[in-house]
Amino acid sequence: MAGRFYTFAVYRIGMAGLTSIERLGEFGLIDHLTKRFPLPQAPLLTGIGDDAAVYLPAAGKAQVVTTDLLLEGVHFDLGYTPLRHLGYKAVAVNVSDLAAMNADPVGITVSFGVSSRFSVEALEELYAGIAHACEAYGVQLLGGDTSSSRQGLVLSVTAVGEAHPGQITYRHGARPGDLICVSGDVGAAYAGLMVLEREKAVFKDRPDLQPDLTSYDYVVGRLLRPEARLDIVRLLRELGVQPTAMMDVSDGIASELHHLCRQSSCGAQIYAHKIPIDYQTVAVAEEFKLPPVAFALNGGEDYELIFTVPIGQFDTIKSARDFAVIGHMTPDAGIIQLVSEGGEAVDIEAQGWNHFTSTP
Ligand code: ADP
Ligand code: MG
Image 1 (tube, rainbow, N blue to C red):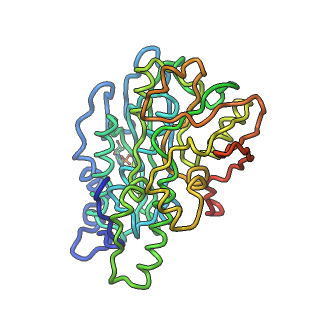
Image 2 (cartoon, rainbow, N blue to C red):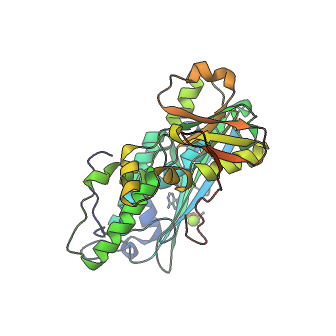
Image 3 (spheres, rainbow, N blue to C red):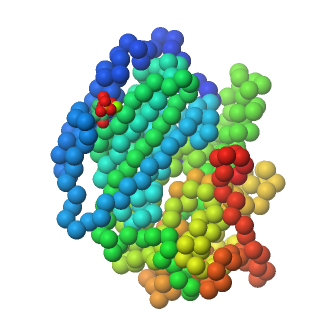
C-alpha cells in the first residue's frame, strides 16, 4: 500500500456522464460485471449462469462456509472508501474467516443491493476489486444475487473452502500453557479509521482541501484494503505446526482472547511490550493522546490471525518473523491479564466493535 494516495468523496458514484444501471437492466448488469471473470475451472463444474453453482469437493475434506454482510454507513463510508478497495475487502474478510479455520478457500458468491445513485462504472470498480481479490486468494466467483435498494449499498460475500477434518482449528482447542501468537501487527486499521474520521470532519467544512494522507498510508491502507493471512496458515503448515486454536482479529485482540478463553475454558496472560504494533500506529496513537496498546486491544478490522500453539513447538516457531509470541494461556478460566513491562498485571475487558452502539 505504500505511497498510495487516497482522495475524499470524489468517487464516481454519481451519474453525470456515466451509465445508469437502468440502461443495462438486471441481467445485462450481471453479464457486464461478471464477464471479466475466468470460465469455471476445476473443482467448479458450473458457475454463473445456472440456478446454482456446482463444484466437486475434494475426497475426504470437510467443507467450510462463512458469510459477511457489509452495509453502507454501518460498515463502510463511501466518503473515503474507494469501491475497488471495498470489493477487495469484502472478499478478504471472508477468506480471512476461512484462514482462521485453517481451511483453503475454493469460491465465493457476491450479492449486492444498490440504489439508482450508483452508476455502472461505480459497480465496475467494485467488481474490479472483487476480481483482484479472487486472483490474489485463488478463489472462483461461483455466483451471487443482484437487487435494487431504496438507498445505499449493501454487499454480502459468502465464501466456501475445504480442509481435512483433523486440520481444522476451532476456537475451543486452546490449553493452559499454550503460547499465544499474533501475525503481522495489530491496531493499525483502527488508527487508519481515527485519521480518516478526523480528516472527514475537516473535509466537510473545507471541501476544497484534500487531506494529505501520505504519512498515514500504512494505517489507512490497513483499514481500507486489508489482506487475509492465508500466507500465515500455509507457513504454519510448512513448519509442521498445527495451532490448537485460531481466530482472525476482526474486533481487537482483547475481544478475540475473550472468545478463545471462553470457548477453551482457559485464561490468558499477554505481555504489552510483545504485542506487535507498527510505528505508524504508535505515531497516530500519540497524536490522539491514547496508548497504542489500546488500539491493538480494542481496535478492530486488522484481519491478522491470533492462534495458540503447544509450548513444545516454541523452538519451531521462535524464529518465524511473520508472527510474534505475545503470551500464554492459563488455567484461570475467563481471566485475561495484560502484563506491563514493569511486571504489573491488569485484567482486560473485551470491548470490541459493537455495531449496535457504534462505539469501539
Ligand atoms: P435467480 O433468479 O435464480 O436468483 P439470477 O438471475 O439472480 O438468478 O442470477 C443468474 C446467475 O447470475 C446466477 O448464476 C447467479 O449466481 C449469477 N449472479 C447474479 N447476481 C450476481 C452477482 N451480483 N455477482 C455474481 N453473480 C451473480
Ligand atoms: Mg437472483
